Amino acid sequence: MFKSIFITVVALIFNLSLFGQSGFTLESSTLGGNATNVEEFNGFGCTGENESPQLSWSNAPEGTKSFAITMYDPDAPTGSGWWHWVVFDIPNEVKELLKGAGNIEKGLMAKDAIQSITNYGAPGYGGPCPPENHGIHQYVITIHALKVDKLGLDANTNPAIVGYYIWNNTIAKASIVTYYERKK
Image 1 (cartoon, rainbow, N blue to C red):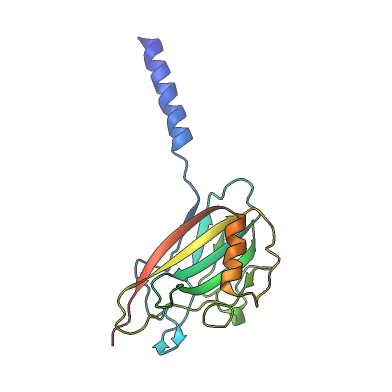
Image 2 (tube, rainbow, N blue to C red):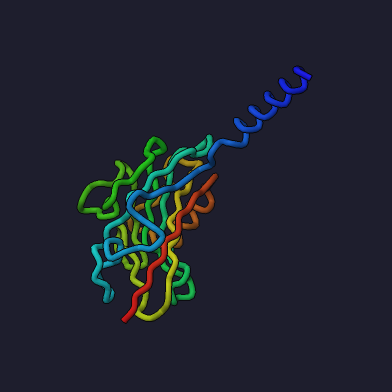
């Protein structure tokens, strides 16, 4: 009986240690389920503060050499969505971006990371700005663990090309989704 209980306890501990580990995770201490005027773009008819959220990630898989972050609106009425933020070549020792790091002028982005142009036509963070009365849009913010140190691209590379390179080099990814709506 003692031997049976001992084996059961050992098996339970093994399973908890094996399956209880967290996977690759993305979190934000400043962004909730709905974006606010703080994150909203300032332009295209929007009057927000255009401040990128704080982001942190953990449990990157073995073999991660760098990270990329994308923010994408699949609900944009363009036929191909809208890229709001594209950051790549983030060194693998970096595990957080500070609030406002998407503003290139603030100099808060991780050293050597590149913020390329968005669909707004400029590099850096461009917050939510859906058309008025177009309904609720979802904004998918994704951290990509990459198998390369550098993508070999620059800040003038369009988001579709960057996305292609990210897709070809991703070994894991994690996302958070926020929503935003503009009413007249």
